[in-house]
Image (cartoon, rainbow, N blue to C red; front, side):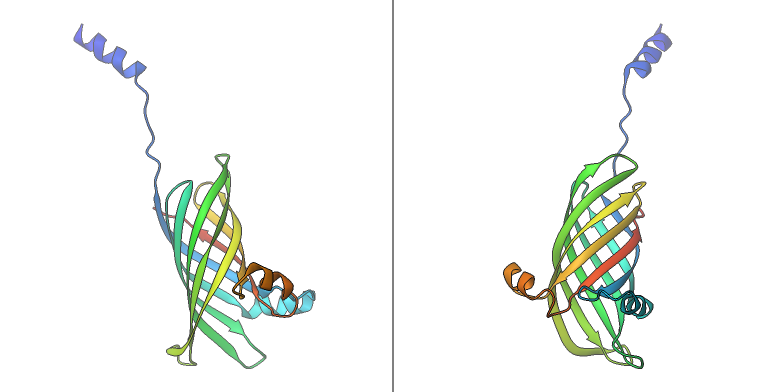
Length: 176
């Protein structure tokens, strides 16, 4: 009788899968100038502009995502500038279909210029980034971000072709 009661309880109970709220993993990306329309210039920028780092994400629908990158930008044929970049994104997942989901994010990005020996050079900047992204299979994440250099959105829109900013495309893995 007791074993029958246990069997009945097991068949009627539902199992809850615990959804994780915290992820950490590697993230890699490429940058291009937003004012470049020449495919040759874009190709040259993609050969020399890259970043590699780590992402952390906390939250499911509304999330905070700090990142740390080593970034390298080709200035001309012989000169590169290297940075440590620390974006802090606030994001919102607005469509979750299981295999993939869409999200939007924005936040400040702090950059520290490095000298040719990769020591801090003292030139620091704070910019803002806005972007959208896709998560695939719950652990692959891709983002496309636009860097704002002006203090107001109106200034940014009016100078979009005069002052180059960066478009940033990244891909990462969200591990537990």
